[in-house]
Image 1 (cartoon, helix red, strand yellow):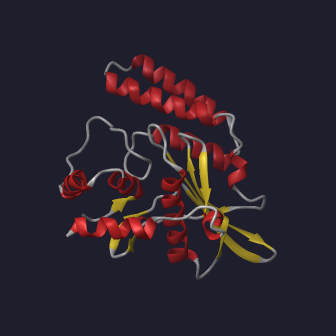
Image 2 (spheres, rainbow, N blue to C red):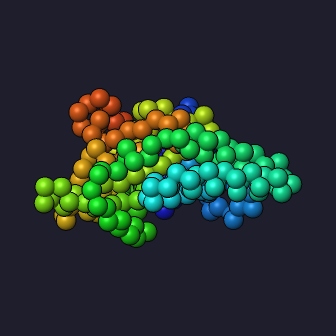
Length: 231
């Protein structure tokens, strides 16, 4: 297994011991190309790609109308689709967009001029407890505050029925580690703008809430549970 996404770690931890080993064994198998998209999270598949992309685009450009435009586009695609799986996928993405269309996405960015950085694929995979993990935020951005160069990131995620706040905390924790590993030599991490945002439930975790102990991160303990199953 070359890497594991945080969404897969969440799926693993929701299982009991017997199904956990089967789940890991299946992850290790080479995956054939998918003809039909399946319900996965934004760091593991493309089921949510249309809604996540639209939300991310609206966030970056400060244009909520882009979400409404994508809703109209997906309704049109839904009408033309013949397969039930495709129709269901379009409806799920439409629901996500309806959730977010009136949400103020500006709360996830500081009120400074932002510079968006490229995110090389080789930076997305790193080890936690010797396990290769992949972190795929939509945006990593820098800004200056009091003449200090700072960095933040946003990672929008989605899942049918959403994630618990503790599960969203796993994404926020992994995101902070990603920023710390790849960018902390040149920038100060602003943990208030290191955000995991569940667009399914409209719940968020900023890493600052982990730092002040408002939310307890379970990532290290989860990786300790996962590790024996990989042997």
